[in-house]
Every structure is written in C-alpha cells, then in structure tokens.
Image (tube, rainbow, N blue to C red; front, side):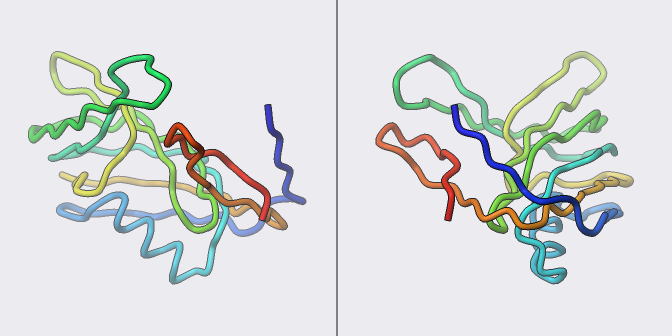
Length: 142
C-alpha cells in the first residue's frame, strides 16, 4: 500500500456542461486553463447522449480491457476519481431505461442536456502516475 498526502484543499471548481459538449475533454481544458494539477471530484451528475468507457474483463496479471460505446439517452449518476499531475482518472456510473453501466470514462462521452462536475483542488501534492511492469498506472512521488 502507498499513501500520498497533500496539505489541503484549494479552489473549488464547478464545471457546467451543455448539450453536445464532451465530458473528459472539457474537464481537461478547464484544468489546463485554471492551472490545476491535482484535484478530487466532489460530485458529478447529468445526462448523456453518448457514453464511452472501458472496463476490465479478467484477472490476469496485466489488465485486459473491453471498450464500450453506448449511444442513447442515459442518466449520469456519478463520476468518481482524482486528477493527478494534470491527468483525470475518472470512473462513472450511467444508466439507460433498462441497465446500469460502470467503467473508466473515456474521450467522446457527450452531454445530452447538462452535466455538472465539481472538483476540489489538492494543494502541495507532488504525485504522478507511472505504468509498472504489468502496465498498471500506479501513483509515485515526484
């Protein structure tokens, strides 16, 4: 186990996305424009017309992922995750009228009506992600 500690929270940011905007791409743009390197998601809700995500399909030493694209009206129940060294690592829960889906948020996920994402900046947090020998992105002190 590894533990990484920042000194506190900085700015609180609420991103309000509208119809047709891309979720992950918009978050990345805002992080860059605001100069935020590290953050934690406080909440994320909304509605989607397209969800793109990947999920693990086995328990091999190295991950094997299945990539999924859904194009239909969906509720975005939640996004959880952190931003480390400027890069979001988010997982989401979405549902259509019959099923619920979860997975790692990918580019191309698109808002149908609105999406609200709130983030809290983490201060004094010098951490990055590095892929290990099994192709797993682990946190490491800079």
